[in-house]
Length: 161
Length: 131
Image (cartoon, rainbow over all chains, first blue to last red; front, top):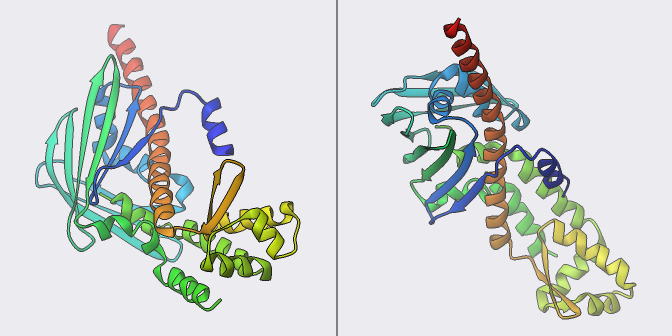
């Protein structure tokens, strides 16, 4: 596909891998060509973090980003997407400089726990992002749950064919 | 933090485009007939072409549209391509993983830019200190 060809020509981009480890867990891995301390900085300073966490292509506007990166500290991000605003917030559970971050995500029912490890080898950093969702349903809202009413309508339509 | 499932949940564009694709697929009488037929039993493209008095190429196109919309899946065994109703569950799982990957890949591409700036800044500072 076109997208793939594009990423092949810009060979400097490292591959992002995603694996659904279990019903409730998703693991994302990616190498960044920089030492762990710099990568960690980009994850823990609000002014840097907000520049990359929400990709421009997703049509979201960041309204505010507050991050108190220490154990027990809170974060809160507010976005606008079309006519609605979304808030994301939670608490940092672990902050180990240059190697490990753990936070909760609390805006939905039940907590999602995200663990990020920064593993530096020869000036490059392997990032492993592990998301543990409270339920299988919480993970699946990303797909069929995104527009349940639309798919329900579709099912109805198909049933009536 | 801005859990990835949550962000995807709000990315309605994707679903909307799939939804549009589904409706586009259903807007044609032949394609609705094909779905109806496949609802009764799996069928090869050749059989479908015969059943609907069409050329093989024409039927391939229709099946392609239905496949894109996730309504039909096909499997080639030997020389025969068999069509069946789309296993939406399975396909959605694969599509979901791909969405998840797409989100993170886009994030990381921007992270690369931020980190590269930090690298340059550090280098420049190092140079200054040596002066």
